[in-house]
Length: 393
Image 1 (cartoon, rainbow, N blue to C red):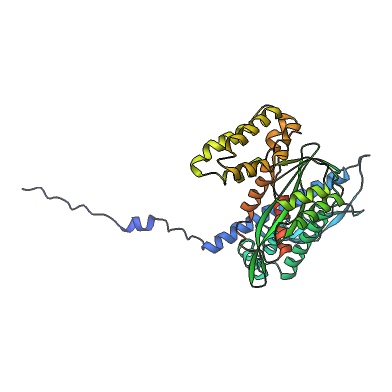
Image 2 (cartoon, rainbow, N blue to C red):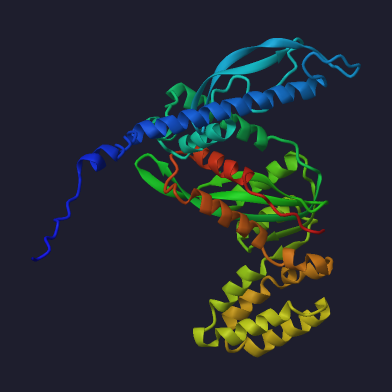
């Protein structure tokens, strides 16, 4: 008899009961709110711990410690709210001392925002962003929208800092003074006009770079440069060992009036461009190599020989190029009067051009500034955040 085959069956009853139910995932928004709450709790703990350590360092005594080095006593605490990158943190416990000498480093006494957040909101405002838009951005990023009065106060604080910077006392002696300008667009009524910010960048006797002054002008002129240089002198900077600049007539005239005893170095990069503009493109490579050969000589005497040779060779072929070169002959080789170690720093205005490039990168998102004051303030604020490398003088 044929063997009967049992039909294989699959039991579904037990398997269904043994499977665990799928976990219920939290709502996307709820999940992020939970993460933000955890971050805020952690940040609050860190801030409170840092403030306790700051107070302990001031008093030079831990809680309840008896020591002859103690400089004061605790006096309880108070609570306040603080806006941070993680959102609004409520009831932050701020310690106090009896003498009221404790100054919080984490945030300003009357500020409701972390310093970097306050700076960010301020820069948005002075760059022309409306109060309403700043509030929207803050609401999205921080979960809290600052009031119009808060933003205005932050902006006013930055403007006051800028005005104080403009009046600060300068050192009397600088090794190098770089002068140049950078253009921005500023709205005047219904139209946007190009405005130049004139800049004086100094290098002190220790090699530290420092922006000495900023001035906004409708156009580069003798009057504008004279005002800037007069401001530099008025604030105490009266001795310059060398001025490095391009060849703008108004700038040169102002330098002669206010720093007549200071030698001047003409930027070789600018001069080379001016000379080559008068040379046909097919000849520029050779002419450029010969130009560079002039100021690459080991001594000024050798450089003068090459300069004379260049003049003799090209006077007939490219008279405008030679005229452009020789009109600044007295200031092209000034760098030879200084140590060789300084040559690469003083042959050109690259130091200030590099600063401008850095400022441009950070302000590119601002197409047009709403006012001249906002332009100057945001440029100044940007410069404060740029590290200027020290040079060996």
